Image (cartoon, rainbow, N blue to C red; front, side, top):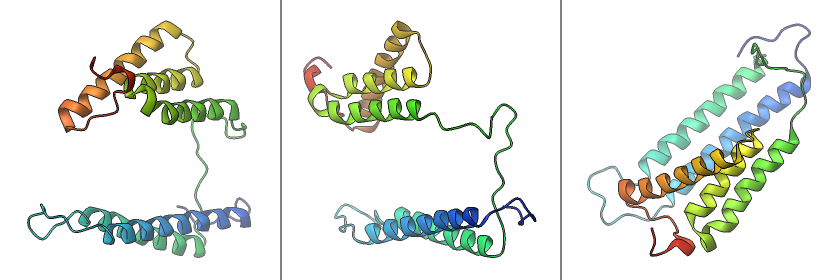
Amino acid sequence: MSSASSGGTTREQGRSELGVALFLGALGVLVVVSALLLPESRIARGPVGPAAVPVVVGGLLVVTSVFLAVDVWRGGRGEPEGGEDIELTGRSDWRTVAMLAAAFLANALLIEPLGWVISGAVLFWGSAFALGSRHYVRDAVIAVALSMGSFYLFALGLGIVLPPGILRGIL
C-alpha cells in the first residue's frame, strides 16, 4: 500500500478497497464460526482438535481486514499493476472467462455420472482451449494423463477415492 497521491486516486477506489476489507473480515468471521461449530472428534488426541487451524486462519483474516481498513481510512491506496507486457487499459476478455466457467460447470455436472477421470479431462482440456491452446490431440492426451494421475494420487497418496463413474471396475 502506498500513501494517497494528489490526483491519482478516486473515491470509488477507496470504497472498493474498503469492500475488500469488509469481504476479508466477513470471510474470517464465517471461517471462525464454522470452525467453532465443528463437532468434537472422538479420535482426536491432545489439546489441538480439528477446529484449531480454521480458527487461526479465520482470526488472521479478520486481523488482516482490520489492518487493511485502517490503512485505507488513513489514505493508503493500492498501486495499479505495472507489468512490462500487460496492457493496463485493456478490457476484460469475457469470452475466455465464459469458456473457463463452462469448463468448470461441465466438470461439476459430469463428475458424478461420468467420474473424475472423464470430467477432469474435460475440465483440463476445456481450460487449455479457453486459454488459447489449439493443439487439440496433444491437449486431450495431457488432460487424460492429468486426470488419471490426480485420480491415482488422491486414491493412493491420500486415501481419498474420487468418483470413478462409468469407469468403475476399470480403474
